[in-house]
Every structure is written in structure tokens, then in C-alpha cells.
Length: 443
Image (cartoon, rainbow, N blue to C red; front, side, top):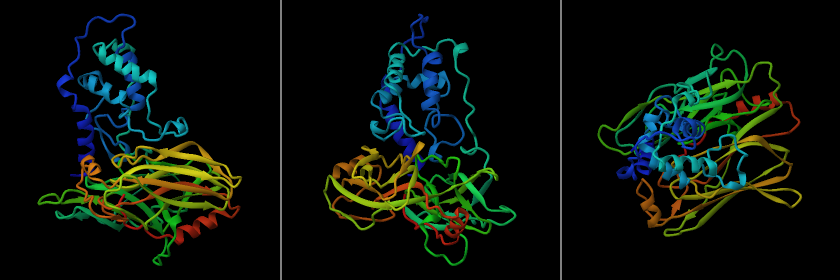
């Protein structure tokens, strides 16, 4: 089963579980205090649901929901099911704790009042209301979420994913950036990845400017997995892209093997650049704070794995992306400051592999020099967990780091920049010249 098929099946299961009772009452004349779709519910759906629940176009992580919720006719049959999902806080999908409420620009939550509105609408007949009072329909992008890109790169060659493939991790070259495509160095403001087939589970982009591929983590550009939104950087921060740079796609393909399941893939990455005259004073990096040296015992319900990074310079953080596989339960980023105090930066108490959400600050987070950031993730390797997942897990074996989704990973990605007081262009050019493709690990 492909990642989009699994996503559609998951959401469909959540929603159609109430199918026998989806019917709602007749549309009787409205009273002044009646909760109606156009006046009350549609604005909530526009703000918090239609990013995925719309008929066409792309959505977060390249996914689409199995039903649209942009019109009354589309929404009314699902009224009771929607009410149940929002009341249980299973939709919209957002996994950070309430401690960081309001800090992230892509936060997808409903207020208590909004939940009451949707539940009340369902219980009182799911009335239409007056279409004249409806909000203006949102013109959702049918192309790239970042808008019209300045540069789009495909895989250098279409890649065939064979019938017998279940999990495949491989680094593939992108089309080489020529001077005709990019006449001069440009600072990247936004990056978006687009899967080229339904069997793509993740893409990570990295750069290398020469044939001598010297390791350099600063070469990571960003990535996409189910539920991940495009990467944006604020004014003054960017990643430098040079003419002549070779970009790589670190691909993870995941599907059910079998005759006739093979597909061609030609995934893409797109870039929006800062204006040429923009003042850039921060070089942004995307790095993982991770641990690959672990073993989760069979039958264990609460195995904690950690990793740390000390930021030697004053640092500005733009966002996070915690990543584990099917046994991952939760994730937490904690800052330990030089003065002895500590602060939880991000707590994800219910990590969901089906929704690998990135958390993007509204206002970047500043850390003083010498701050240590610990990332802790908890894993479960029990038969009960096996029953909860869409893939069969062997819970009788010890689990180690590995690319396949039935193995595990522990990576806390951080998007950040350091204030080193160095010449930024020189530093960025050096990072671009010394970077290698990301390891072909599963996402």
C-alpha cells in the first residue's frame, strides 16, 4: 500500500466509522440563533481543514484528503463524523502540546468555541444557512504551495521502482544546475518538494558543488514526508545556492510488493529566492540531532533514546521536525541554558508516523551561546503496537537503526542559523562546496 493510499485509508476509517449514523435531520427554517454552515462552520473549515480537504491541487506533504469540505454539499454528509473527530481532537492533525500554543505559524488546532460550533451544527440538523452570508471561497493553489518557483529541478532521470520493492532507500542525482538555469548565486527563501509517485514516502534534498564529495551536514536543504509543509525562511536568513551545484534527492520508496505494483518516479524540488537586493545576515542550516547507536528490546513498552547538540555560538532556531518510524511514541526538544535554567522547546506527546509534521516558529527562537539542546524520543516494541500500525512489525526482535520502516530512526531535525560574525557569503560558498548527499535513510 502506498503512503497516499495509507493516508486515505486512515482518514477514511476515522470518518466512515460513523457511516451508519451519518444522516442528519431535515433542513428546517432557521431561527436567528441557529448554527449554520455558511455563517458559522464554513469559516472554520477554511481556516483549519481545507488545506487538505479540497477537490484538487496539492496539500501538505503532497497528500490529499479522501473527501473535500469546500461546499455545503460536500460537507453535510459527513457532519456527524466531522463532529466526532473534532470533539476527540483527532482532526485537524496537530501533535504539539498546549505548552507551545500560539508559537508556530502552521499550528492546526481548533478553539473550544470552534469545536462547540461544529458539534452544535451537527446536533441541530447541519443546516445550510444563507449562501449570501458565506465567506469568499479561498483560491487554493493548484501548483506549488510556495507560489510560482524561481527554479524547479527534477530527478536527472526517471527512476523505476520495481514490482518486488517494499522499502528502498537510495540517493539519486537531480538535474545539474547550469549557469543558464542560475546565472549567479542566489539565497533560498523557501523550498518545496513534490513526490513524483504515490510510492514516495520521503525526499531529502542535499547539495554538492564538486565531484569531490567531502562530508558536510550543512549541505542538507530540507525534506518532505507525509504531513510536512514547505520550508520557509524569514527575511535576513537563507541558504546559498550556487551555479554548478549538484543536488541530490535522498529517496525512500515504500509500497506493497507484487506483480504490477512497479511505478516510475520523477520527484521534484522547487525554490523561491530572496530578492537579489535583500540583505542576508544569517546562513540557515538544516541538521539532525540524532542517534543511530541503539537497540530497542523486544516487548519493551517505554524505551527512551536521546541525542544532544551544543550550540557554541548565539543561535536562532526557525523550526523543528522530529522523526521516527512506526514504534515512535513521542518526542521532546529541551534547551539547557548556560545560566542553569532549562526550557521545553517542543513537546510532541503523541507522535504519529502518518503525520510527520514540522513545527515552524512565528517568531524565530534565539538561544545564547553555549546552549545544549537535548532531543528525547520514546519507543514501544510490543504486539499491541503492532496491531495499531498499518505494517506488520516483528515485536519479538530487538530493533536497531535502519532505513526500512520496520526498523527505527531517532532524528530531531532543527532549522537554524548561528551568529559567527564571519563573512556569510564565503562561509556559505564553503558549505555548498563541501556538502554531500544525505544518507539514503528512511523517513
